[in-house]
Length: 469
Image 1: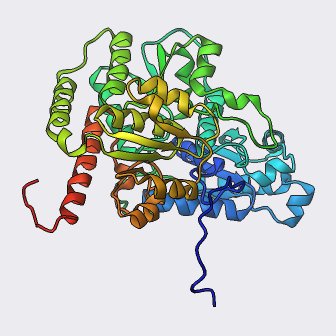
Image 2 (image 1 turned 180 degrees about the vertical axis):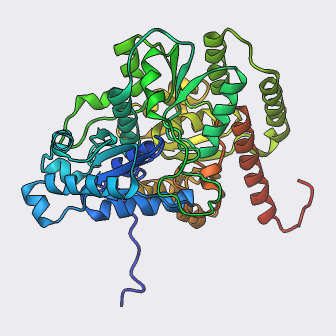
Image 3 (image 1 turned 90 degrees about the vertical axis):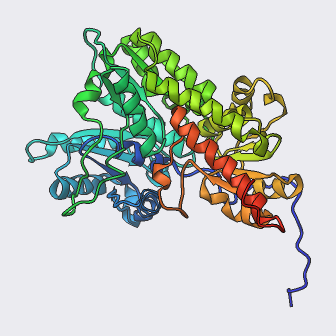
């Protein structure tokens, strides 16, 4: 009886979130903790939270992702989760023998006020076990921020827990943010080619993207050793990607001002380690900025290999310009990714008509204006957007291209426009975890994808099967 009922398109402000353009804070924290060597994350909350996080990470990384849970029941919810916390730690130590146990909280455990640090202190004091692992905790209620707030809170917590001061060394710290495993590897190649000794935190390039195993390993190899994190306080400098980071508005019930401190911030304030903060190095301009910082710290010029990559990239900009100039794109995802990707698209002549994020910083528009001086004023930047808002906006404004993760595929399909998949999560393609974004080489891959997506669209919609485009 409802078959012929008209579909009413909402044009009013909608107060609920529908298909949020972000993920939960403990998920981001779990990714960061998986980048510490020998670490097993424990989600302090319900079993469902850890199941959701495992499902998301396994789908993107195509790897087994062991994340433990303190498995709250009704009793723990009412009387507190101390017993569950201690049982979870005991089980993880018995089964995994980890070097590090990282506990991240959920909405539930934060709401009832569980003091996780005290629980761990009590466990360490009362335990009869020998050679206990190192512990780190992160406060990550999901009603406060996004997965990126959780990611950066975990990185910051690890630095605060393990970093020490000392005589200044020549090594540097690199805080890459939540990028792909291939991005992490490319960064390591670049830093090595510059001759740097470095500490990368986190480094999940192996733990979440392993070679094939002959037998199952409970804890994958790789990750940043705690002994390396301990040296962060004596580094010559830190490089931190992202200008928004976890400076989001604290919209939840828990108001924790410490969330506004990043790992590099802490090292600069506590140990005087200079912090070079910059956008993710996507595009020529942002990668130049990163390379310039490396040149300043090392006193060396960019290696020839990267000069050649840069020249090849600019040449390809000229080759592909005619296919993409003036096209209208929608960019979406986490805030620092959106800022960097918008800068790149602006650089190659694509008009970004909507830059959308589920983040809550309120700084997205200002950062886009600062990094896109040519067209930044005309770009519509939206914090706290969800995918249904993106869909409704796009029906009226008709973009030519979507750039972001696979969660907006259904919108691109409905509008019959191409989607260039990048960022996190990529659930509907193989190799999503290995997509390159950073540096001249990563930008080259992205540029080729964008241009080829537009050529493919033109071919698919032409009545003639052109082989030359």
